[in-house]
Length: 64
Image (cartoon, rainbow, N blue to C red; front, side, top):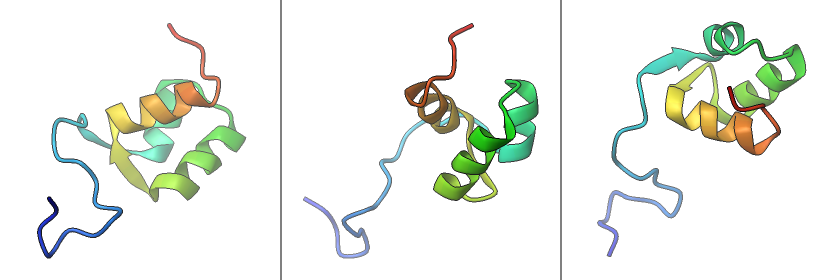
């Protein structure tokens, strides 16, 4: 059951990794500019590293 202050799109709580800027994440994982722009459109200027890894892998980022 959701509480009053949680909307339908409320993000689940839990460990999502450290916050990292999209640009730093793109450099670290050598993403192309198109993928970095897609992630920034989806998450904004920063997000949890785990969320970004999951989203990038869903879009075809190769596993290391």
